[in-house]
Length: 130
Image (cartoon, rainbow, N blue to C red):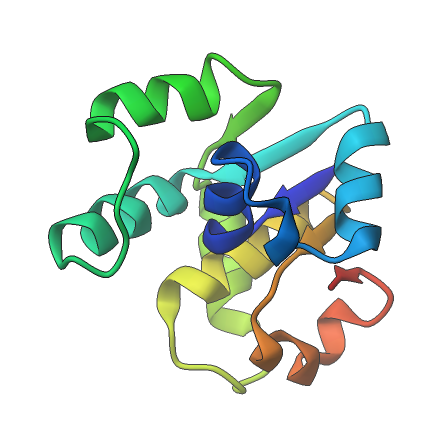
């Protein structure tokens, strides 16, 4: 299982593969299970509303394509994930990133991310696909 952070999900779905590392592209093409945390949907919608990113189609249509029109699984926010997010090493204040990290850990997966701060989490040692 590979869990995508929100930026990787956005770039992958929009075909902006130049923003991904060669290792990320290869892993995403060959891994049987790829998922995205439900909190990434909020993060994406919030970024669109604030004008930080632009989608090529209306948001609901993009979500449909990015989830149901792809092989990317929507991963729920569970109590175990919420608890783990709170218990992570205190390196990063963004609660959404912490929930995405905790999702990958709870599912015993790798995390594909472009966020340079994720390297500071000892919990992600050998799990970070950067």
